[in-house]
Image (tube, rainbow over all chains, first blue to last red; front, top):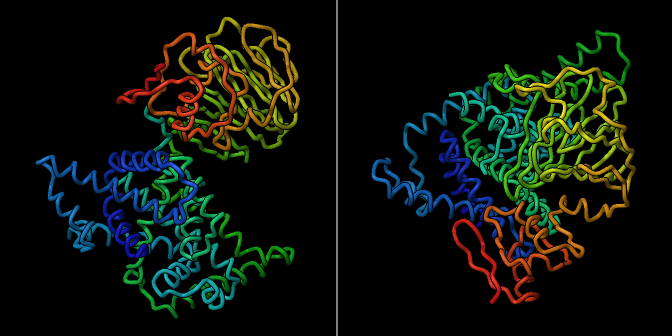
Length: 165
Length: 363
């Protein structure tokens, strides 16, 4: 249940968090302030799910605010998507995502075939770090290190692409 | 109140922490104690929240990564293994101590930041010299690791300018409070400038709180030399010449007057009066790094001022009699409600929230 919820939100975020830099910083500030306002936060059992919940509330309200502004494009769809779970992203966005992913994929592959293979095996093939380590002839902690670097590298590259389109 | 960001890019340390946490959740390797830590980490800075959500977003997109790979898994593995074979061969052909051979694979990682920077369209580093500004917003606390391995922990609404240009490591505390953990380097003294004070350290740990006209220096570890800044200079302009640049001074020329040595467990207030180190309560001086405020018989006016540094909407109290009352207690900086309730119980006050402030009055 939480997993689908998290997944849905991550989909939504990936569409929302890219590009509109000014919005993103306002949105994260808002999410942060809401986290601070939560009383009795030490009792939260699953802070990751909690973060996703708070974030989805903020994004939801943001979509509503944008819906109130008539000049904005199809904001209702965004709200519906978030709540129905039906992800029918804008074809233009999709193309954008594809191109970015393509670039990231090439860059990481060129920089480190090991990190690249680790990321693909872990994320797309569902292999465990132990299994990956076995295939690459390294320990599981080392495979984890590859994975960590791979993700950090990709995210940094994506951020560069966002700031310098 | 908008925070000054050096480039808007996520700090690489924050990015790595975010990935660590994200992976821990992927591996379902988060026990209740770690959950608490993660929660505290998120609540320390909006940048942490941003970093984590970025990684979450990437993770979702990365599901499609396979469609962009030109090889099947077996071939990917082959290529990954071939990579290390090449590296191993190369290192064997070069006469090196055996240990170096084993380390070659790890060495690749040492080159990552370089490669990342090259790919990073080289925006941050070009043009900017080695002067960087770090800042926090209301309620935010962040730790930055500087180029030499020294760490600066910034409290709420604080900013520093770090200049690692010449033979010295120099930091201006523009506003707020910072805890410095200085990496040892006797050849490059570490200098902090703040209102009315210049603080010199080699390898040590100390807290600097900049107030309106004075600076409070508390030494946690080691020893620092504190000098009063030149009275002719405006606060914050220590060592600065008009135009915002810094006068090139020889490394030995410390600011005017004889410095006073302050040792671990002591504090000194640098201002118009003579410098006089006194015994300090280290735990309460650095309580802020754990999100706590410690008051020991402090006038309520001062306590409010202290609290307001952390709040986006200030607490306002205009009752002179109440302002001079003394309060004691330990409070969490993120729980201003708790503090308000304490005041309500203690002094029979009530509070009213408006858009811009929280007004406290007596019933």
